[in-house]
Length: 273
Image (cartoon, rainbow, N blue to C red; front, side):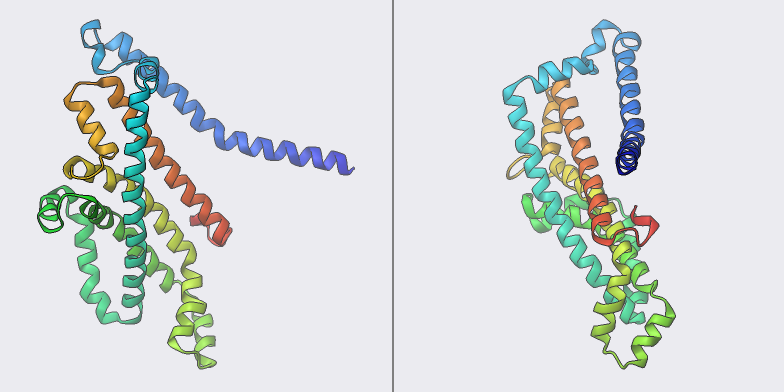
């Protein structure tokens, strides 16, 4: 009986893994087929260099040691900017939300500016950021923070406000201090929402790091700078390889934070799944 139940559990786990991994793989195969069709059916031979076939990208770009080194170094530089900006956005966003939760007048005063920060196109602010903070690592981090900040503020504030009234009244009845209510009740209840915001902000931080690379060229080049360089030189295989690596990096970061949230808060809240 134990052997049978163990075999059934293994088959069930394998089926769950296949159900999660199967659809993305099928979509990837379909997109690759569409890519080949555009290259060899839609484009005439004289224009195929604009969209090289997938195998050409693999052989010409990833098959070159120099290009692999360039992309690997660019990815590392972009990751440093993205994670530094994400850490700053998480810290600022949580502190901002806590302040607004405990002082309604601060929410009325500051939350509209958080919304404005989300609505203003970052590309319009990039020249000002360069003038104010230079054109190197710190300026790129500022761009990441501006893009990734709002989800942390809004999700954390929502989580802090989601505490059940009965639980809050119990803490007040026991004459708990404001600090105890914050650390033992509100922040713990807000953890699922905080991780959900961090998951969104992580993807946005990667976007911010790549966008900043397009404009701030001082210092070590990131993936964005490589994409701009390959585009200006009409190096299509290298360009597609850099775009593919940047996309996979964004997916990896988003997926990693999703798994981290499930490990830290379990299944407290459906939005963290």
